[in-house]
Length: 440
Image (cartoon, rainbow, N blue to C red; front, side, top):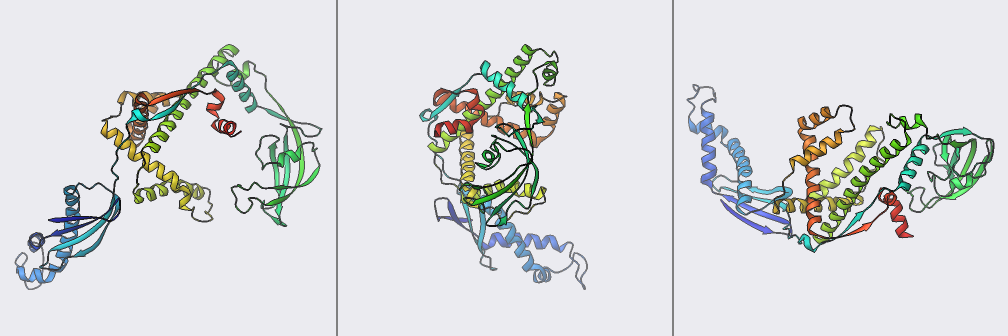
């Protein structure tokens, strides 16, 4: 077998493979001989058909079959011989297999990039520390009360934090965009669930009042047909309701699983839950920082086929969601919208695989076990969930991959230059608020 490889771009290869006629003929003769035992042709006894007759009748088809098999078997052998790691996009572009001339074919494909990892000791990574304060616990209890808030109708003008039930219709240039009248829609003033300015127009409104006003949609609004457009709204206020927070009494405390109903025990339970959430969030934030540092420090030329496949994986659940809701996508999502995300995923996947391989990092089975046990704690029968994970190879593999990523992150953090910044519990748990503060 003769193999030659041409580099057509940084990751694209074109490989030409030649096999001598003797190799092809040997395979063809062997197949024809096997056929002769079972072939039945009128005028000849079974197993007594002359080889020349068999070759004339079946030689062409058998040769085509052998050519296909030889391409399949020789491809892997040729790639191993040339030490080529194929990333994808494999195509056999041309095949020449005239009888007497042997076999010649050309295969094109993309290979994985050569990765030269920057030493982890050279990475500067921003770390974070946080704590749960008494004020944080107070705020969490207040949020729990807000979740149990009752609404009581009031006969007065609407104020901030009131809940209004409204009927409304929106138009742009006399064209209704709300698909008719939206009825009995509940909106809490100050919740920012409507477009900017809408809720402000409802301050001071009373039950039974009709309002008409204009508001411009934000230029970056997700619906391109509405973005930046001036809209006119007709609104009827059906009712105004004021929120009533529940008391932190024994019944309220027991409803959150603290059977004693004691307020001190309730605060301890809340704080313990917050501590667990804080640790998970700190770990997730550390993981993001490590990924960012690795991705920026190790730029890669990525196989196009892998990026396109990743875009398909990103788009698939979007399409599935629409199908489950019996909705049709207005059009295929533009692939370039997801290209940057796909490139990051592919790049990090290649970097992670190289680090694990180069440093012989193996999954810690004990850590896998403790991770599964931690996930099972919230179930009525934790052991049943643990057994389920260990009896389901796909689910177990997902946990192992997650643990491997965590091990890699820990490995990088041990070696990198890490500076720890203090972050409040609220900013940690609500990163969008932290971003807003940085912008301000």
